[in-house]
Length: 98
Image (cartoon, rainbow, N blue to C red; front, top):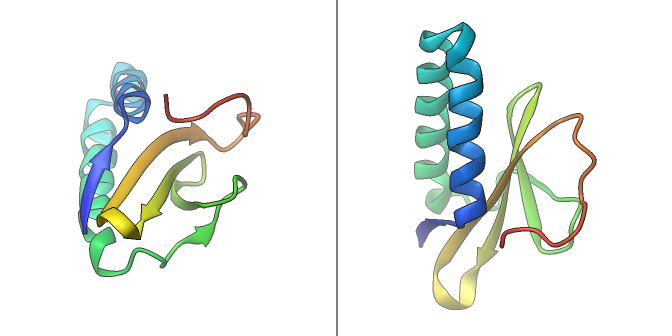
């Protein structure tokens, strides 16, 4: 399986990095490295993380404040990263992953 990032998830990741880097560039780099490592490992154990709040998704807790939402598309061999959301964010809200 391969990992693909939806455009909105890429935006979320960039926005999160920029937000954290304002106060702590080292922490931003460490979190981004963690995101990279954990998503790179998904093909080996795609169902490791809990089922998501939206049917067909799963949720990986990155930190107590941030959750990565992904979808396993077995029929095409893809793990699709849908969003990175704040844990306090009202989710689901509207259409995701566009």
